[in-house]
Length: 307
Image 1 (tube, rainbow, N blue to C red):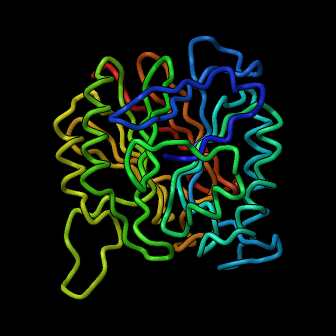
Image 2 (image 1 turned 90 degrees about the vertical axis):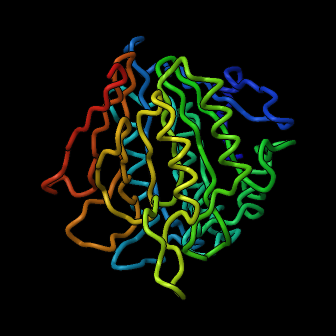
Image 3 (image 1 turned 135 degrees about the vertical axis):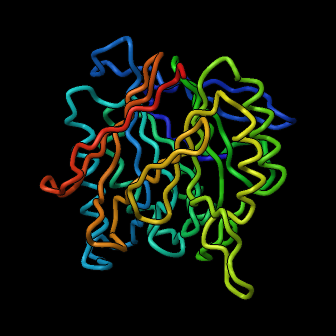
């Protein structure tokens, strides 16, 4: 299941439940003292931080450490501070080295000190054991899906289902596996009383690659879609991986590609993070670009929960 680095001030909100023979952590995303409204839950959504061991390392003209530090600074200075921060995979630079996660933890330390709860999912450039070593106190005693990191983040307005698409370290292909997809179906059915938001690192891939070519997205996308398509309370699927901010819709749910915190593959795209505001009626996503003059800065999407 994803690692949850729970600040000391938030540990009292941690709940544990038995799911399918394993133990899954459920983090209630309650508001921090700085979050002014009792009628909304505010989350910071990050993806593709690609933090290297040395803060001096750059890629594609970008210093990834400086970008993450800047984003954390922005999160902390929001008028309504997020209660929880989710990094949706590719936390580490390329191979998930121990030093990568040590630098990653240092970058996130101000958020922990501010009482913001941290949730991480696995990307193809992550490695579970070095990540556990850097956050040793957060390693779960049991897992709900063998060799995968799955969990549910419960808020008053919607539930977030965090999946693990890591197949092999530093291999572009993503895979969920039958056991994880079955787990997702069970947990969605058990929580059909609230809107559902599903998150995983890899992009969905609707068409199989040409023979001899690797899957760049989730190799078992069709099995995942069978679960999402058949459950009307699923309102959004959020992913990263492609370093591209985009939005589309498939039937009753939206597909949101989160921007990277780190470098860009397409220089015209924005990098940065997304503020998510959840209410009883909708989830509002607002793009926070690292370039304040980017044409898409402040772009807002609203995903209705009531339709």
